[in-house]
Image 1: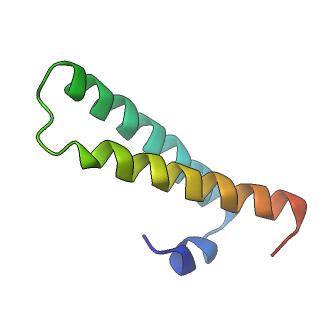
Image 2 (image 1 turned 90 degrees about the vertical axis):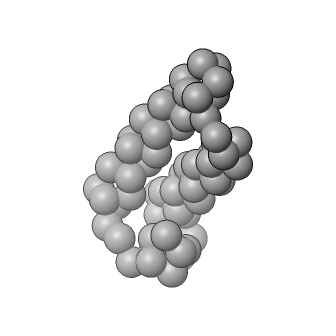
Length: 65
């Protein structure tokens, strides 16, 4: 999801996406540890998505945008 689309979401929706991203990261790490993960870049992608969501939530708390 692009940053412009993420900014249009409400705070509750962002928190739900953040929670689901953490769950996805957990599942990816589990698959990585058991050597079932084919594309290792997925872990990187999810971590970046989590960082974007956390940044947007912090911006909203501080009233930056």
